[in-house]
Length: 118
Image (cartoon, rainbow, N blue to C red):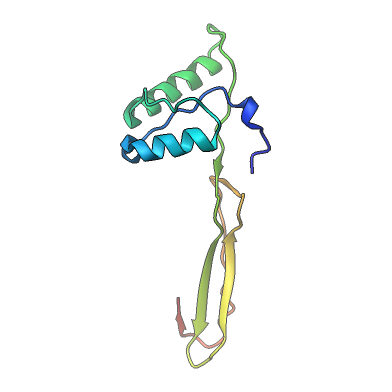
């Protein structure tokens, strides 16, 4: 989905408790064509290191490679609702697959009757 090839991946860093499972590490390494997946950070250090890198990028005193982080929605998020006394269920897609965050969204429910179940 990202458009990069396996040759463009330098290394893979796994973070989180589920990555302690050897099968997860092995399968991920095989799928991404890597000799191994690294587990050198814990989740708290990731936040601290990311913050330090962001501060260094914004500072005129440091010279670091720039990077960007975009939150990516890999599954669509929808809401379904039905008006009282009607059989028709209306579904609205709130965030389509591939949308980035943060995002603000206004919802309008065409409710002429007054009662609604979400």
